[in-house]
Length: 142
Length: 367
Image (cartoon, rainbow over all chains, first blue to last red; front, top):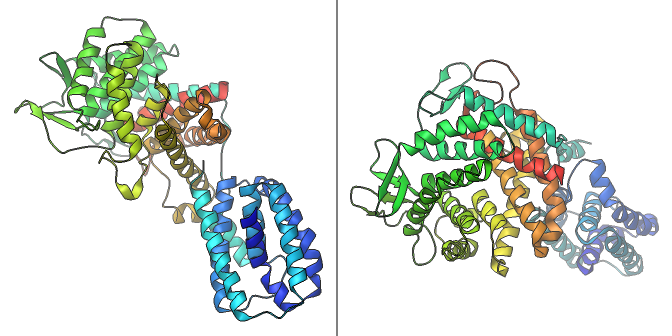
């Protein structure tokens, strides 16, 4: 749950930095996505471990990209979707939805401050590590 | 959109899992046994490799002969009389190739000076299966003699040497195999169940501990745990309460088989996914994955420490069985229908593992 929260805050970092208005509906959006992660995987005919591997791959790539380049402030960016789904499948939809809601709220609150580049890069590193962790977790599963 | 397409087509393609009911799985197993019946020579041996276009490619492998016989007896246990007749002819071939010394007996490849552990272990497993299928106990003395050969190849650390030098009359030092260790482990585990109190359990537990530790020197460290369905069978048949390390090993095995079965089902999705994932596995390989997962599913049914994995194990094993049925040749030609061809060629162990896998998965479906 804590890991999901940290990763989602990191994934939402571009929104915080951009101070965009749609940050407000990022909260229910992320929480809702987490809540339906199992259903989404089933709809896509993919098992939970395979979906986590894919989510981990997406997070690793986007985290690396974001480390060297600013990401556009989009609520449903690939890393937000991947983190939400991946952790929804890993820790359970309820916990991930709660983590998503908390992460969204944290982003909203933190948005009153300026955003140093070091923090955004740290967020990118968190996203990369989370991606590798998700992928390894998916590989080491039945 | 391109990114979404790549993600869907390559990173996370559909897992294709054809549903297969138990009767369909059993029918597919019987069709494979029929292939073996048609591929059997008058002396009881089989066509080893068959090319769809060029026919019999020759060659032979005594370990695989024993494995095929085992699978046929597994089917015979389900009441398949034709499989029993084919298996008995194959058993006769092996009986003629036994070497007996000082109370032990071993199956030896024709013309070889070495007895392979795996051949004798699988012969013992086949005889045990025959005993279960027919109730015939005439081979009990032979079974014990085969077991004694296995035991004398066990080293102090519990691991097994792979070969016995018949000319020097001693085990070949140093050689260990990721295949024969599990075959030996399973053979002594089953001997313990059939002949309890005769000391087989001690041998089996020593083997189990060293295999579970990952330090038996047989499997490559970079690929651990080796997808060892024989050890999975043995753990599933173990008559003792497994240690924490053995359960952890079973869990790692399940994860390995699970990953391989998921990847295989994704290979079925589209040509690009197949290309990226290295192409379809041979029939024997897919069968091994289903066998291993099914054996662990049985184990999880009686060991609560693995119960959390059991639903996923059932899904993966049945998925693999569905793929086996889908990939089985349905042509009525003499030596094609009923087999699993890969790039135009089938090997007799494709049918061996296909039969064993389908039987095991059918049991899951019936549960």
